Amino acid sequence: MNKFSDDVIDAAAKEFIRYMTTTGGENAKWIYQLKNLLLSGYLDEARELVILKLAEGNACPFTQKIAAGLLKQATQRGPRGRRSFQRPKDWLYIGLRYTDLDEKRSWDRKIHTLTNEFNMGKTSIEDSVRFYLKVMRRAKEISGIDFIQLIASEN
Image 1 (tube, rainbow, N blue to C red):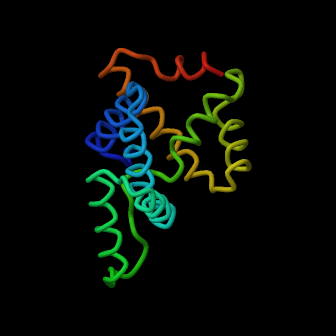
Image 2: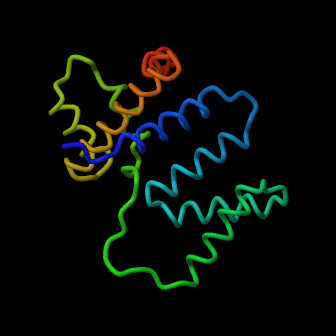
């Protein structure tokens, strides 16, 4: 079962490549982190980061646009029920941790370890790892860079 569309995987891969290959572009890295928080459902954390950036007095137009959207959202009543997001929560952190785990461990042992570390359900962890692996695979197809190997070599 494919929970995430190819468009979502493709967009995440392109953003990840931009994030990893941008040097000195703090704005690009900031925007990536903010978009990832928003698309993963961390609205409160995104609001706090936007507030900090606005308080610095040098917020880029993208940050101002996001701030306006968050303010508008806070004043409107949204639909009832659980909100759905494009990306699993903490997919990047869970995926990075997954690649840190011993290669000799089985999938089930790695998932069990991550379930305990992140205090999340098995399905949520599996979704995050699968999303991460798909994004990394797509990023490699697009850029020719094996980011999993690159990240592993830096550790």
